[in-house]
Image 1 (tube, rainbow, N blue to C red):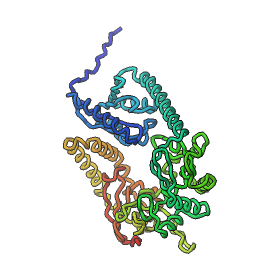
Image 2: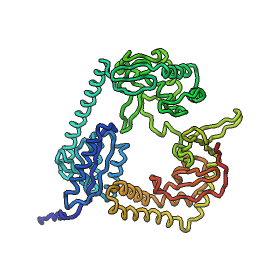
Image 3: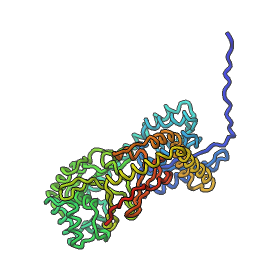
Image 4: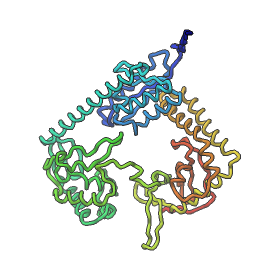
Length: 480
């Protein structure tokens, strides 16, 4: 039998590695800022002190570790690593990287398949260790259990303080709060009672806001016009009925979601402080609100189910706001799908009908599709020039390296999908569905009453998209 000798690849230990750090705290609580900043400083020092490391930057998130979704910089960092822009990722501990076992191991496997190493400083382990998956499983289980225990202990201590009359609220319209003492401010309490009374008697948020405006009643921050969200938060606030609740928000896949769970008896401290409205009035308002909403807040409702397909698609430069979708029915005879918005002072109504918007988009994209001789080169040159800009800025702006590399990763992804995007453009046919338009167009910006600008969706980042010339159709865009 012939002897077979396995010749192993010789790695070059002196090769300079591109190294990034990752820091995270679980919430946006200002008390965690010192921990957050300390993580960043330690990671930066760790990387810069090694002569074999090229400092890429520190990616950072203020999000729950229970899921990687919604952690913008974490996901950008992983994208960069898989695209070959990062060789090593250093993080303080497994709990800072992820507390979900499945996500942790899945991410580590993905990075290992791209020859990217992850180093956990606290545990003093590297993903180059052959037994890393077993180690991660054991440590991540412990981290999850510890996190759950801490969460339950915090909830218990908060609830215990509340049952003893303790307080975590410092400011609420209608009350003067000093430490543990709540005093009703009668002139403002009358406004709160009026809002509840109008609502349970069938008035809409708009009716209530108009009434407050006509009476010259300002908001808690001194604004002339109240916002619908403010009215709703007051109607849903159990504190106006003298109660104090625990668990009104919860974390779902990295997002903070408001819940109806505060109506449960075990989460409610009743008669905690003097009430402005009776419990009966509050519960009636809450019941009415729940009957009117199509989204039940005790469950997580994905964003795409809470908004229309026009969400953040058309923007008014004058009002500095995105237009909202509404179906107008003038005199009850017509149905006119429309997009509109007001400015912060609730005037200067900018609007465009969906019919006119589609006419503009169809015209502009049709004209663009006729430039197929040089269109692919135009798209490709735009992407390549921006990638080159990222490379040039990387050495010049060290403090912005993570943003620069995130932009570069996004551009590289766009380059991979460029051919398919180009084919969609040159094969363009008239459309009548906004979701089809959004595959080609990133955003429409209304400049004034007769002009708008269209940005193509070459890239999911706004400033990395190509401007499409304005449509030849000159349509008056409503403004009042």
